[in-house]
Length: 120
Image 1 (cartoon, rainbow, N blue to C red):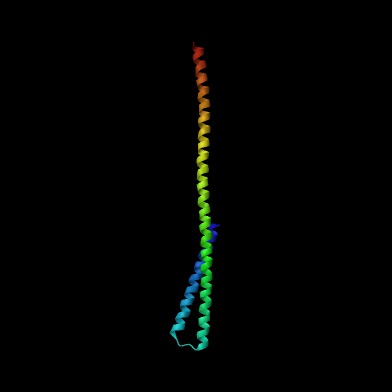
Image 2: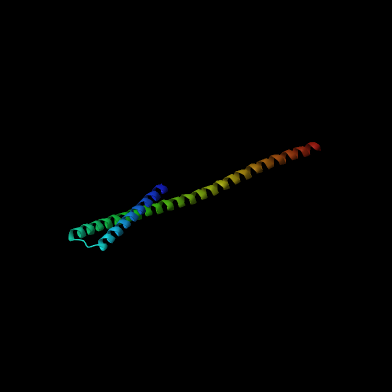
């Protein structure tokens, strides 16, 4: 899910770059030669359209970045929870091992006591 949002963000950033390049190109054309009123109006409208596209792409990028941040935060919380659960599981296993070792030690002590009593 995080990869999907990252790819989407990268695609949006790429589109923003293309739009910026196109704006610069059109602006350069606008400034480089003498234009009649019709051409000027067309290019001006097109530049405004590109600016709107760029604004929309930037807002999409911000939305995607917020989603990525939320997912990262959620993952971080999950990793913290996993770490706590892992520590609790280790404590449980350690306690179980100690109890089993205690049981075996008690059994060995009983066997040693029987052997000791049989030798007498």
